Structure formats: structure tokens, C-alpha cells
View 1 (tube, one colour):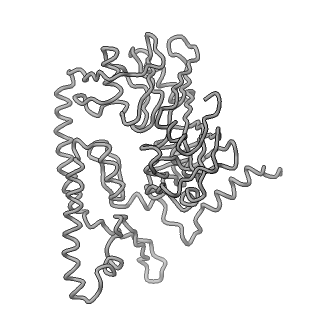
View 2 (cartoon, rainbow, N blue to C red):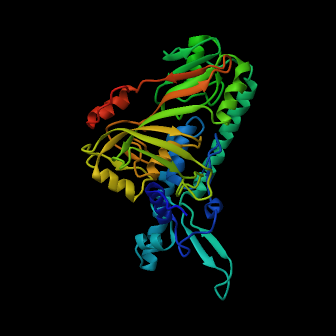
View 3 (spheres, rainbow, N blue to C red):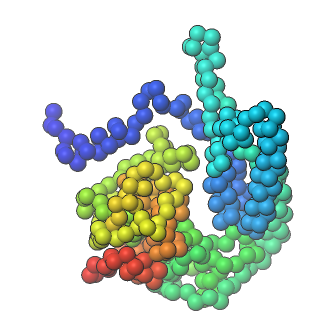
Length: 410
């Protein structure tokens, strides 16, 4: 039998190091049983209160006002403090110790207690979950938010015949013909509106440019910039969607990643699922991304002003301390949510500015990820079509601040 190549052997060893031993391995899919909170707008399920707060304040501030969320949490924390203090005085035990013994951690993470129900230790495992101190208040507040969302949905149904609003904001058109229009999406703008009577999306801006509603073919995250393709005519939509389903569409992204990878080219093959503790989980949906290092600056100092995001790990903290910044070309071969961001973090080179998986700082106010190119077959002519978008100013400014030069040809 032929020996594994050095690269294959290294990947195999890395995978083995990440596998927990039998004694520490948690029950399969245990996280799915955890108490969770569901977004009233999109249905996203979150298990940790801080992460849920980040999600809903981005997703649905119209039905979940940020000021209400913060006031509700502050009131719950104040009430908990008032209840703990008399109990601590009566029991002669500090409130901090009581919190360690029976209350959730300050960051709101729910913790599992797994006990064996068998007298001889051979019974099945049972799980008890500690709830956030504001759990009851959060669920009552979510019930109100769900009512607001239901009212908005009823309003949307009633207004279904109403045309989408037009936003007369300048649009950078990258390519256009009678069937398609490709635009350069800026940061902070969603691809399509959440409700028909709201504006602020790229669809609304294109309506202001074209005078009619385009058809959405794919999307980018709100803070990801770059190429987005829309259809002008309905009869070509199925053909483009078929290309996405068959994975014949090629997408190229640019990212600023922490550290300097030892290899110029590498591939991350790691399954993704919605387990908020890991995100990359055994048994998740297959996900594959190819990466190429285009340029690096080992002397880029990140530690003094950077801070690790909620889902970062010890490897990222070490990478930030070590410094360095790299410009990466990223080619996702599958289409999972946050795939590039997760895979770069998994490789130990998280994206600059990523407030979930990377490191934030003064250099850029969002994750430094840009959809640089899209390659498809034109659904009408059958000819290959490539649309490219230049790097945005905030991306280039972050590179300049950290001393990373843009290579020629990019």
C-alpha cells in the first residue's frame, strides 16, 4: 500500500488531534436538545443569549427593537441581583459562589449536566440544562416580537400587489445586458428586502435604477461586498438556479486573514452545521473551500488593538499575538452559511474584522470579505460569463494600515 503524501498525513494527524477521546466525547447531537431561542423573523435557532442578541439586532430590529432588548436584559439582571443578595446573606455564602454552584455563567452560556440514571452506572445518560437568568423575560419578550412579526406579515400579504419601493441610491453596475444585471454590493446593504413595504436593499436600489423589480438569483451577507447577479426576465431564472444547484457556478472571494499560512495553497474540508458551540461539527453538511495566499505581511501588528470574537479559540488568540496578515483568494466549492469565514477560522487564520469568528479592531468595521468574481454560463446564449468587482476602499485602507501591499494584477 502506498504511503500517504506529506500533505495527506498532516491533514490526517490534524483531524485525529481534533477528535475528542471517548471519555470526553459528548452524546451525539446533544446540542439539539438544548433550550433555545428562535428568531421571530427568520426562524434562526440560537442557544446562547449573547449570540441571539447579536443575531436579532441585525436580522429584525423592526420587530425586536435594540433598546427594548437591552432594557429587558438589564431589568432581569437587576432583579437577579436583588434576589441573590438576601439569599447570600442568609446562607452565609457569597453571591459569586452561589452563582458558581447553581447559576449560569455571566456570559449567558447554558451548561449541560449529564448524569447516569442507572444505579450501577450502566443506565442511559440524562441531560439537565441551566437556563439564563433572564430566560422567562426573554421568552415573554419574544412572544411580543412574534406578534409584531405576524402583524407585519399580514400587512405584507395585504400589500402583495403593491410594487416594491424604489431607492434612488447610486448603483455600481458591473455588467448588464437584456437578461441580466450584475452590481457591486457595498457593505451594510442587504441583498433583498425583508418585507415588501421596506426599502434599503440592493433590489430596491436596482428598482430605482432600472424602473422595475429584478429577480434575485443569489445573495451575499449584509457586510460582504462584491458581485451580485440579478435577472431582468423571469424565463432565465430557472437556468441560472440550475447552475447553482449543479455547482457549475464558480465564485471567487478575497479575504484578509490573520497570520501567515505556511502553505501557499491549501484546502479546508470540514463539515458545517448549526451547533453554536463548534459550528464545524462531525456529521454536519459537507463543506469544501480552496485557499491561495496572494500576499502576506508577517510584521503586521494585531495584538495591541485587536480583540478576539465570541467564537474564536486559543489558536486564533495565539495567531493574533504572533501577528501577520495575509490576502487570501477563496474558492468555495459548496455553499454553506458563513463557509469561508468558518473554514479560515478552522485553519487558524480567521478573517480580519469578523465579529463572530475572527478578530476585530480599528482597521475595518466589518469582516474583510469581498466577492471578487462570479463565473457562470449565460442562460440565453450559452457563452461563458465572468463578472469581476474591484476591492472596496475600506478593504484597501485596512491593508494599508497594516502594511500589506496589493500584488500586481489585483
